Image 1: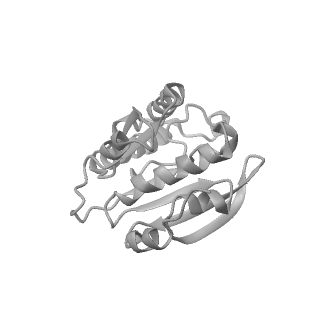
Image 2: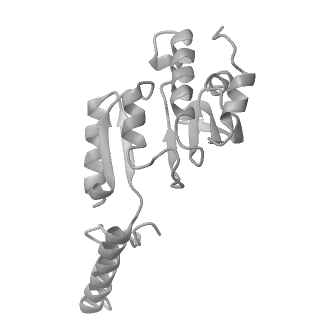
Length: 193
């Protein structure tokens, strides 16, 4: 109940509007109360969502979706590469490394098909992992990858892994705690090849 939004609150029409016994006045009262709870929930929401991509069109669509869901004030969007230092500044802007605040990075990075070569994909995942290790220790990340090899390229130890399909693609979802990842990184500091 992040914002206490009732399911279907933003929906304009319901089939029961045509029922003979539909009480429009009571419905309006219930909807007004739900809208007030949603407004209060948004105002009290302490979470902030930072969304990044290197494709401005993707970000424009995400921003449009946030507005359509009436949640735009909870989001910030930035066109930035997740392997660059600017990405760290963007996602962790409200969190000092020594603070106790937590964060969660959820990422669906490009797969090999969206990068020029398998080597380019491994290099991307390696650099992304380097950035993730610089986030505060109490943060977590969930990462989609096309294979265990790509998952290992980030050089982070996962505490959960799931296999499922993302459309027609068989993918892995790794969930990582960023705490104590330096030890794992030191043990697996091998070449890309």
